[in-house]
Length: 317
Image 1 (spheres, helix red, strand yellow):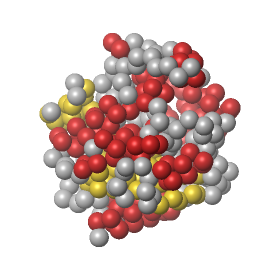
Image 2: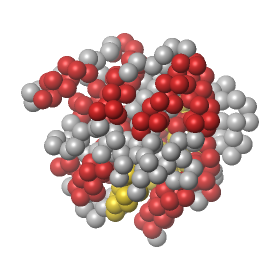
Image 3: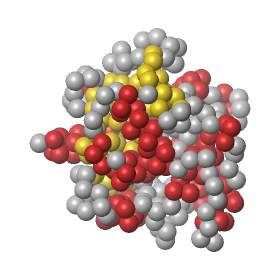
């Protein structure tokens, strides 16, 4: 496993509080990452959701988390952003996977969430980190759960945000939220920005509407940084489906666990977060009233930052 600097991933001076992006070579893929804060502080690894880049953890949020006393590390999962795209693996047919799942069958997929968790652990290896506070959001929360299950010694604390255990029988997404997962993104920048703005509108909760100017600026940054990878999105979606339920295995997790979920989440209903909290012995549950499946409103951050930092700090004490 190796590490190298990565040039030109961000505009110069984009955030003086962050360290320049770099590449870690793990599990035959390259993982692009950057960090915020003091490398001597307790490490905190942030894992993003399906189709999301590391910049979907906003710079300001990461800087504020680092100011709480943590070395914050964020990265592009495989098949998104500037990390390796596994195009040779082909494009899974999601409808076929879902039909097989309903029949109790399994179809081969390029990789599972456990493999994505192994990438995250490989990044910790490259950085010389024995264990870290792991914070995962949506699919990233499911990956974080997989790390806690399969690599418990590498997880100081687990924070699972707006994620599911994958258990059968949980409420499905709202129709409007499920629909956006299958909508192809436009190839032009202006079309993509409007497409992302629509997604954010659908996912936002009633108490935390999106700042449309801020959302458009971020969508443009997303497009300019790495462009589109619909095949990678499909492979990540396939990994979620094929990985199945973690509910039983979560019962063996002894890592201090915090579950955060919004009660107005249209994509991963709040019952899914409640299920995760009930599945992990001793887990703490924080339900945020009026939060949907979009948490990028800065007005949400104080509550989330306080909960994450307190959880990690309490475990350290």
